Image (cartoon, rainbow, N blue to C red):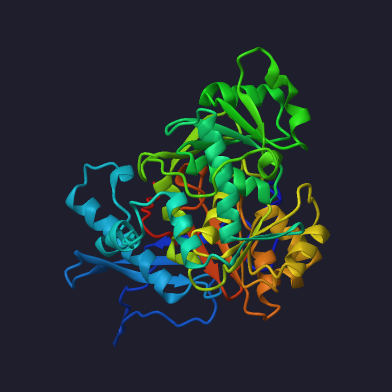
Length: 464
């Protein structure tokens, strides 16, 4: 201990927390002159270590080894009985395999019991649920237009757009794109600041039968060129605020055509009815989103209409908490897929935060003034919120967080305010269309870490 000098704690042994004692005498009979005795465990109220396994050989009267018996002792502030029993069952599983096949390497022995294997491979992945797997994103949106035309689709500091109004604006732009030569199977880049116009733009691209390619408006020119080259986008949707930063698109000649979305209400004499376009069905490409490129050249993740619909119509968002969903992510970040389409494909409202919001106070104002009911935050922003404005988070019906390890302390701080807010750890890479697993919490977590939960509907997850 003096040499290693580990961090000391009164709650555990400084060098190790698990003890295995073999030949501990726990089952050895005692023979004394004139007396016959037997051995047994003396019950203790305190575990000496986190786990202690004390084993001994059980012998016959002739002295032959009959079996191995013992006791597993565990600290109840770390493990419950079912966990300790599961550990014991795994040990027995390993020992049985070793006895039957003594030539096998330890690394090839299976730790899982048959019941655990069935639970992990079958029960946890029994996630099949119905969803409109044959519908395109814009088709489901148009269904909501027919169902609730006067409901608010988009709310922002600029005002509200109803489903009917949003649909009409998107249709005008879609017809304009079609007139420019945009066809099913093509791609249209989108470089628009976060705004209602941005939603008009991506919806119009889908209605024209193409796939949208989000461009980070603050990304370096070299990256933007790389994305445009990889996706062969013939058109770039932009707005007057962003267009000056994209002047490099004009060189060399023959590059993508820039279309200012601001001109939609004044410069285009196009129909407001839904375009009749065969986009290729639910398996057609809906968007291409590029990875960060932190480990090499950025790669485009191709996402289909079915991928988006599967996420947006997941039963996880159907409990009433997601009636007004905050959209504050960059369109080039995959969280925007959830923020945009989960509400719009269900007849709910997207609350669009103004561009450039960077601090808790500004976001708090948007959440409060627009009566947001659900939001997704990166784990780091969530932790910052929990420090500076936990009451704002507690005013939401559900707050989701992820992108990195979520702080259990931050989750506890919000839940313990007692407002009934659900805190969810939503986990998944871009390749699985934003989320793959989700852990919903209404009680404070134990410890500082938060599990990533169980698979969403129609998702199978294997830990290797």
